[in-house]
Image (cartoon, rainbow, N blue to C red; front, side):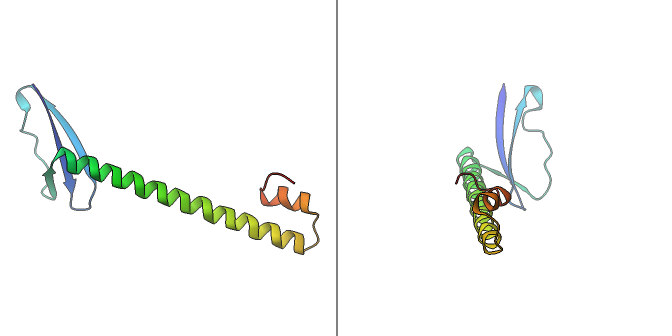
Length: 93
């Protein structure tokens, strides 16, 4: 027999454990961990993935703004645009 159980820690992280054999249900868990449903676990994992995607998108946007600011500063300093684009990490002409 195999049993999958889902948990949330006091810090908010979620995890799962698969138990099998005669030890099912005997795993000792830390005091700050509560058992949750599979649905709650899946929702928490989806929420974390969404938050990660938003974070990465924010990093990409900030990097793009930095590159454009670098391009403006370089061209304002008299560096030819093609060279400034290469230095700023912006592809194309």
